Image (tube, rainbow, N blue to C red; front, top):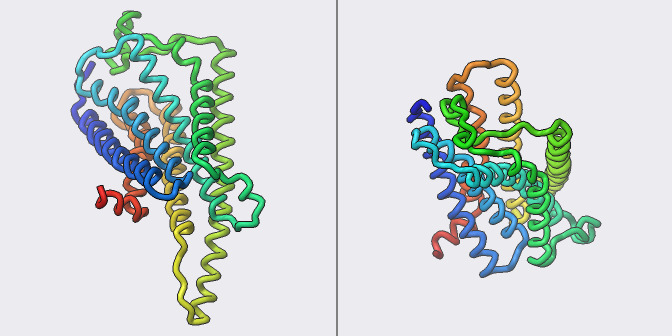
Length: 298
């Protein structure tokens, strides 16, 4: 395997920075959830940061170790665990982001709206929803452990030279398409819900803006409710998520059909995969004043 210190340094910085940022935000939201009014949005945001940490450790750390050529550190069991957690965390990131958007849209909706019936009123409801997301993504990725092996046990030297220590065994055509269809269907459903909820929040924010203009014309003071500030933060998170998700998809497809050699430009999709997990906690720190207050309190 060829030593690549530049790639290793970049992955190390991204993984370290993202892990620290997500850990701080996770502790802050768990503290707010336990000490103040228990809001489902706090628990969902804490779960999102936990998902980001799992993704960073399962994707970023192996790439860092491979780039610095620390040798074959993975056996069959660790290969299965790392690849499985990376796939599950990716799905959880999509599902949790969608759940966050939907819950925030329901919170913003009028009190007598039909959407209020779907509100997660207790922590148990929120935990049950998150548990369902774990079960769903674990089942969708359950084929991976059966088709992943360490390259040393298979004596495949060409994969070692390219820095790939985990090898995917060939699987049947039916199995491949079944799980690929489930993944595409999951992404389409949850991103569709995310888009619908985001559109509804934009509509409510527009109505709020018109109301503020009316009050200003009437020379009345008006303060932006915390729910609307939170909605703006969630919309920024969703835009960030969609940018990295679709940029990763399009660039990966472009490289697949247009680039044959293993040039350094092929590292771009790997960096995009970690982009949302690294950037999102710092967006929350910047936008949510409660997180900053929690830092000062602790």
